[in-house]
Image 1: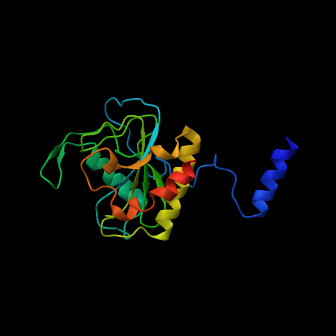
Image 2: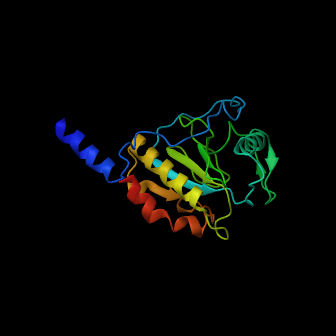
Length: 194
């Protein structure tokens, strides 16, 4: 026991944070005033971490709370996508965590329930993290990258997800998501999961 404490003290003195069990700051569903889920969700156990991007223009003018309320309203109704494809009403926000342009993280769908997708893969078993932006053209900023690293490290530790199970949406479906500028981060994200 003394040896573990000494190692932890040495790591802290070197500026290395040792508490991977602690979640990064996350705005809760109650803080952004989420509506209750609609219908029945599909329970699942986390085995993967899958990164998405919103594929939309960055909106620094909107608060993360407003973005989540808007996403939930869209998610919980039948609607048409920009492609013209029909989207049925979902149980809740499709993602478990949302990272905004300012790096703030908000809780989306409760993690005990599988997410949703407009593509052909089954997201059961996946912790879904979405980063605001369209990262084939946008570059994630330092705040977004820091939050993405923090949430991946925490989720990997909490759910015992190995580095080779940290992937992007395009690893499972025919899509450009999460964009090449997020894909560049995967070697480092996978190291954090180890």
